[in-house]
Image 1 (cartoon, rainbow, N blue to C red):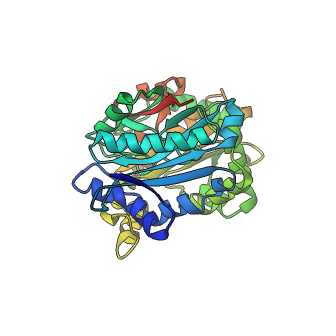
Image 2 (image 1 turned 90 degrees about the horizontal axis):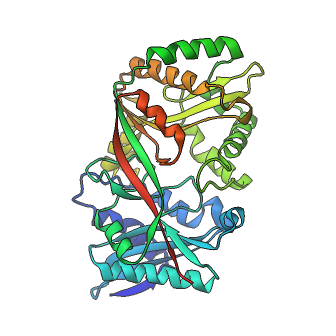
Length: 371
């Protein structure tokens, strides 16, 4: 076994394609689109200020048996006063020596860059996939989250990694808004003179999209664990890639009297089964499966982001967002709802106790000193 840095286009394709072979017989694995992965690794707006290196582990026959990407985000280190290197895109066969060789390679590069710790799995920023699965291995993950075999965390803990934080997810069935929340939402709407808006209308106005993304960054800065304020380039990239996929069918906007966004609920129909059928590619039929998941009948809703602008926080607008989700769920026949990963210490996660919820998955960020 040897470690090889990814430099050529050929090796980049092997890097991106390795998990598809590793998880070929795993019914829970959800492949990412290869084109999206290549964009993230070579053209992401975050690479304007982040450093990153990639390596493959190869066996004696030159077959790929593991991969890893090491990243340094100077904005994160400055914002939190740390000297950390991130690792992500970490996959390995069930061989401890392969896993250790990959981590050691990433850690050595991090030391050369003056870093004192390494943690992950993480992305450049909080927009990407993060957290190693430690519970819920029998469930199918959301399209924006990672899946890994149970031996992954075992290997990291054997190397001396410890828990930095956990994110938890819940599954709800047959979303029915409690009567109490229905009354609260109606009273709040009248008291604060807020009303529902249209995400489709917002999408058609570039200035409103820009204002929304600035508000989004401002809302979560300082309140979400490990959150890093976005650069203008990152927000522009998000406006191009993600905003066009939003729809009134799943998303909710609450507007104030000035027609500014007071609160938002960003959700997507589950894309997991569609991506499993696409097998990493839009062609020949991947695009069909994805469009069908987005706009056809889909009984599962991924609850991605919920927030309120700072002047509206603490005023109960979550009840309005949940009320709208309940109406749309009944209208479009949605029966299952999966919450986005939330840090376990976040009191907002307790909202799911109001529903028929069960733990779905738990993910962990591991950390280790390397100086």
